[in-house]
Length: 161
Length: 105
Image 1 (cartoon, rainbow over the protein chains, first blue to last red):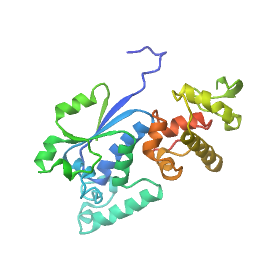
Image 2 (image 1 turned 90 degrees about the horizontal axis):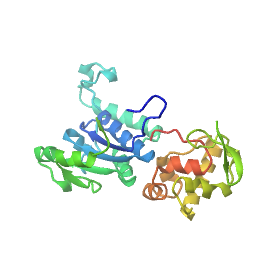
Image 3 (image 1 turned 180 degrees about the horizontal axis):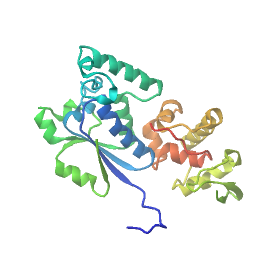
């Protein structure tokens, strides 16, 4: 540990894990990874469990906001469960984000890949859901095990979202 | 706020190396500023980005983010990271003599 007069070492590498498949579960990890690259920090993204939807060819355009069990939304759980409410709230949120020029999830993932970040899918989850590598967008480099993840993440910080 | 000399001229820059007064910047300073960031030669594409940064700052009072650069500067995100591997918006702002852009995306 450094003494109080020296600045802490800057972060040079991060590995961001995205484990949730909701809109609010996916965006934070993407923002962390993109922000890291913008600062010149090496970044890798790992998609596991329902987070795989963020890189799934057929699903990543249809990511929805969770309107049930999401107290931050300040919507009664019963109302959040009514048919169409999740779609409606998702549309509203997407519209707000578009106004702020926040890219959609497919566009954001592509941009982060273009920034040079690595993209990987978790093997255990891929097997669990009966998926294959070609179910994912072409930016996904590989389907890897947890051990391989730790090898790739070596020497950096790990952020779990 | 430390005063440093760039291309033989005294300029004001903050601790991170960003100009605090963009009016002190001249094009002649860019190669020296770029070299300090590890960029030995400024190509035409580098200049496209640098000039875009200056124009955006002059118009909006803040530098563009990588996302905006990729969408509107004519240089793709992929190329931007090849030109400025340590962070396009951040490094280009430093070379262009404008403050660090503050966007999150």
